[in-house]
Image 1: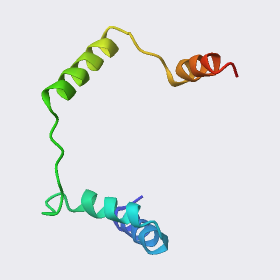
Image 2 (image 1 turned 135 degrees about the vertical axis):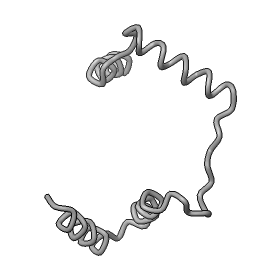
Image 3 (image 1 turned 90 degrees about the vertical axis):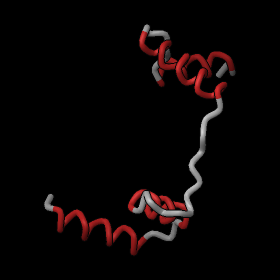
Image 4 (image 1 turned 180 degrees about the vertical axis):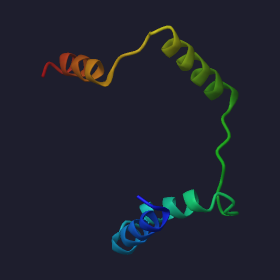
Length: 78
């Protein structure tokens, strides 16, 4: 699909949507220098939790979505 076709498709989607949240997010995505954007800054605890999670994933200590859903069903006795 060419750039022109992609632009037309995007414009059509924007015209048809009534989702205000989606439109705001699109504006933020397309205009990252928007001055009205509050950038969330992680605190030290949050950074540590993310680093810990990344390390867990790297060593294979995680569940797939299917595995997690199965465990949830077991916990709920579904």
